[in-house]
Length: 229
Image (cartoon, rainbow, N blue to C red):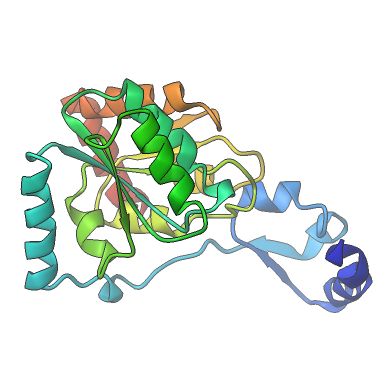
C-alpha cells in the first residue's frame, strides 16, 4: 500500500538519475520499478572487506566447544534474521532427510524463533537442527562450517551478502532458485554449489547430502567458491 503513495516520487527520481545501480543482472531484469530505465542501469554486485572477517582465539574456542558437543559432525550453516522470507522452516524440515553425520546450525534472531523451535521439537530434530540465536562472531562459524545454505523463498532476498562471506572461506553453497533474486548470481549451479527449488525441504536435503558425501564434488565447489569470490 505504501508503494502506491511513494511510487510517483520514486519514478521522478529514477527519471532524473544519471545512473541506476542494481546488485545483480537477475534483479535488474525482473524489477518492475526500473523496467523503463534499463538503458541507464548498470550492475555492480555487493562486496565485502575481508579485513572485517577476523577471528579471535576466544571465538575459535567457543566454536570448538560446540563442535565437541555435536560429536564433530559435519556442519551446515545458515545465517539470517528469523523471518518468513528466509525460508528457515524448510531447512528445519530438511533435517528429517539429512544424513546422521550432519548438523544444521542456524544463527540469528527474529520473530519466528519460537515457531522454529516448536517445529524442531515436534519433528524430533533437536540433535540435527540447532538454533544458536545471535552469536559473537559469525565469521568463525563461516570459516569452520562444511557448507553454507541460504533457503530463502522470495525476492526480498535481493542478493545475500552472507553468500559472499561463505565464498571467501571457500564453502560450497546451497541456495534456492527464486526468480529475480541475486542469490543465484552469487552461487553458480554446479560450479560453486547447487541450486534447488524454493520451499522444498527434500530438495534442500538432497543437495546438502550430495555435496557432503562426494569428496571430489566438494573440492570442486570449494575451489570454485574461492575463485568466484
